[in-house]
Length: 147
Image (tube, rainbow, N blue to C red; front, side, top):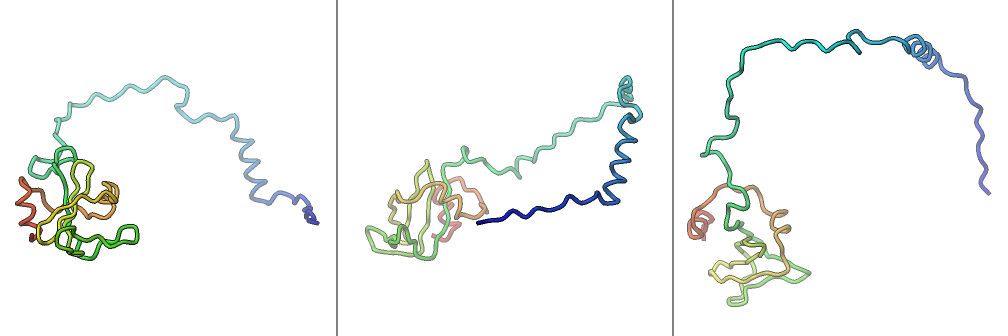
């Protein structure tokens, strides 16, 4: 059925031969300083310790220091082949998506909120961009995003 192709073993190339000869010649050689006593470290003056961390005004709070995150979502939100709509007013676009305590909430333009169990924090993190600001209150964040 299938035939093996038998190839003759070729002679080593010139480069392979030269490498083998060099390898044999260098086999018993030891680099200078190898295996001898360790060199004494040079005594230098102590270096001033510098705080290399960012100043407080440039630090970004970690996820456990925030109550939640939110992002605008202007286009319709399609989940499992179904378009998400507000349960109270029927709006289906221009959402504000909130992520807090491992839950995702949708807020329509009219201010109605509903929990969305088909979304999770991993989805939010994949689809949200970098945070451009942090706010002390929920209302401050709404004003910042234009709601």
